Image (tube, rainbow, N blue to C red; front, top):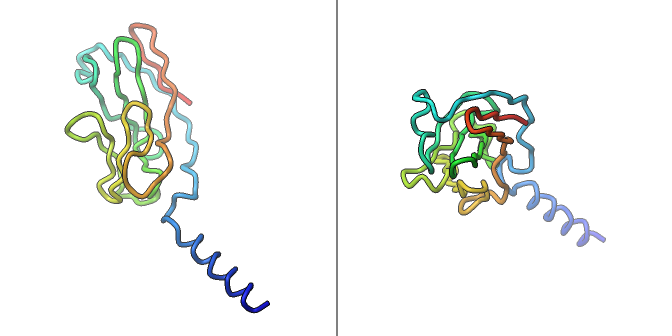
Length: 139
């Protein structure tokens, strides 16, 4: 009996030490804004593979343009250490990865899935609706 309790305690300790904040969910906050990605105000969104940073969400938002009519929007809060105020996601120099320089996590910019680092969770994403002129980012 003592052996079973001892094993159970070790298992609980191992589970509770796994990751910093990963088991907590990034909170839902209201996101709803409209931009005009083909305007000079968002010059980096004027071409395929371009991205811009916006305020909103939990830690800011990255909007990425894949092609003429496809956009992706991700929260800049890393699923692993989103409560750390110094942990913001950035698009790397290649424009293909989103990285967290604090924990070392790397994510695919096309779907937000984790590629490397301590997290197994994907990025929090927001919906995008593009009508050829305006882009609505919302949840």
